[in-house]
Amino acid sequence: MRKDSLKILVTGADGFIGSNLTHNLSVFRRYEVFKYTRMDTREMLASQLEVVDIVVHLAGENRPDNEELFSQTNFELTKFICDSLKSKGRRIPLILASSTQAAQDSNYGKSKLAAEVEIQQLGIDNGNDIYIYRLPGVFGKWSRPNYNSVVATFCHNIANGLPVSVNNPTKLISLVYIDDVIDSFLSIINNDMSKKHINVEIEPIYEITLSALAAQIEAFNNCRDNLISERVGEGIGRALYATYISFLPKPKFSYDIPLYGDERGIFVEMLKTPDSGQFSYFTAHPGVTRGGHYHHTKSEKFLVVKGYASFGFRNIVTQETLKIETSGDDPTIVETIPGWAHDITNIGEEDMIVMLWANEIFDREKPDTYTAEV
Image (spheres, one colour):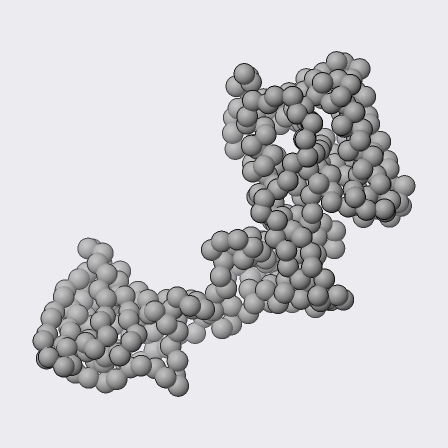
């Protein structure tokens, strides 16, 4: 069984993936994280390799000014790690972040493949447990535009009002989300390991065309104007949205929305969804009644968050009536029913504040709202 406290060495610790991993590890006291960056010496790396329990080798070069750095960083650094472990007889597990480009005939791909071969040989010669990740494009917070992925570039440019260039709109790209990568690393770090020399795949892998990617991020940007949220609750939409907003400059951490006011109070639309309605809130001065209409199909949910309210209902066919009183001190949802006229009156002494959800976005051309007294 593993020791309760693990010493984990992360190479490339200040990079995109490295930053996400080290910050995740820092949450837990059972880990002691050793960091190696390009600013550190090989002597320091060698001393770290003598004491750590596992190596997560993320350091790499993918866009150097001089292509000789491919070999120097991707292969030679990997060989140094392997040689150091062999010389000390250290059979600790090693995780390598490689690339799907290791299968391609490019200088970058060749350097990544050479690193894979070196680490596989370490497992054979020295008995280390080896885990190799051939990663496609990785995206998420703290990535660098014009370096880590096209997602980072598109998100940065659109969030900052800069143009994006889509040279090959129909090109299909494969992507994995940073949190899924980190979760996979942690699943290895946290479990007892048997001897393994394996290639590990991240799931899920998302596929999207460059034009669809750009359009989706533009839609995220537009939601502040049209108030229509994209589908961001799961899958690639959730991951892309988190990435996009991580690139927002500080002045865009907040934004204004329209406010409509009259003698009754104010009405504010906060958020609209493509297929699940919209969210709003309104106020009413003491004694003010709002509503006085019915719907054929539309339904609404009201929640008084401050003040005291009396809801009135009347069935427009049977003339049956109903009154419901609620307050902000006793959270209660009041739902309007198709075919029932309804209104809401502030029966308190202060302004009333009410949250409102409607099952559809308000359509001025077809509002499904008909005046009727309660």
